[in-house]
Length: 488
Image (tube, rainbow, N blue to C red; front, side, top):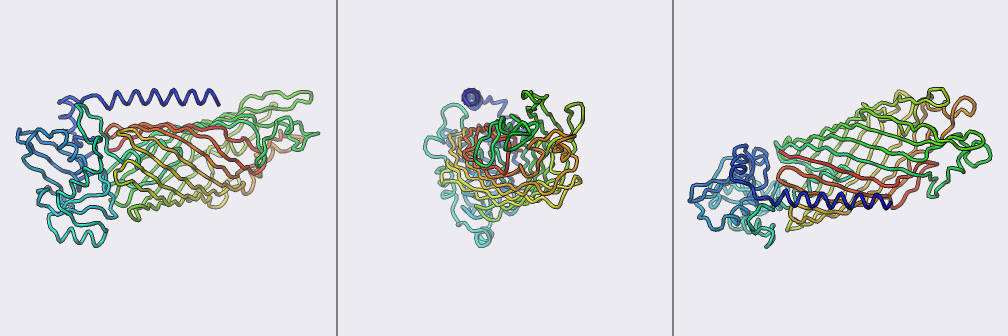
């Protein structure tokens, strides 16, 4: 574990230093002009089209004009340019999305509708009647511009909103709600018209055998005679690398769609008994595209998101390897997909503190494998619960996370994989037995992410705190997730 801890610590330190340099570089006037020309918020870089209902325009007496995505970013601009005289402040009418005078508009603070960069949400209305209709349908309270601006200033905290000659601010809360680096996907919605693209790399290291909660020496697994388990060969170590590309798009302020593709690289070291001694076998290796997931997400209320995913069986379940001059189908854990259509319902609770510096939440998800695949088996259904606590420090966010999962054994068996268990013509190994799959596990993880405008980077490292496995299996040793994400 010491090399892992040293690597993670060094990686986090290097990542932190790099992004502190990036986020604290003063943007040039040309860069700011490019941002505005591209239709992006002058403060946070978000695509203004995605925030058409909360955008604002500030005109100064010197002729300069600033376009921002929200009253939160408007408050930052006013603090940043406190020596300039303001000529006008315009805000988008929530109903028509046209710009109106922000000072004379009727504002609504709070309610069920997510407010993008604002927490709590803040909307402007040209007509007071529209504001009151919004409150009756979605909650919140009617307010004046001064009250809305006071709320925006309170979000930032005293020092957080001060300008010190360089752009070191990122919208509070956004980097937590849209965190790229959680080892598990935490489901959230986006404002209408917003895109989010995420690339995530996950590495898992498995080392040593376990049965239930007891570690088992490989010497007690092989040879076939004279041991409790009686296998000819057994896995000793396995690494799993997963590349994931995820795209999300906000159809409405409450409904978001998602698609995710995966590419897998698996490698497993094997030890075979040759009568007088145990001999390492050539590692088993499989690689290729895994299953593809489509998902719809709906904002039930301010705090709850419900979602339903459908996993498509695009990953291969017929990978083969060679041993003793014969070809066999790879064991179940080396295959790339489930081979079945899988339903994945989930419900997510997510909350921010009033100053948007703390985020906490939980998510429950179930995976149901529909029927059996073409090889006459289905992976065990699983249930997983996640809980987390995050703290934002400007553009930097750190967090701790706990995840508990329980997975059933494989239902049925692949007749080709079953040939491995033939003591005369096969090479019996525990991972060819469908009863040696699933179990319960509690993971602990810590992470760090950094956000600069629409781009975020993150890393998370974790390890199991508890493992109770169904039968004889490789146990999980540690895991690492890195990710990059862009919103536009």
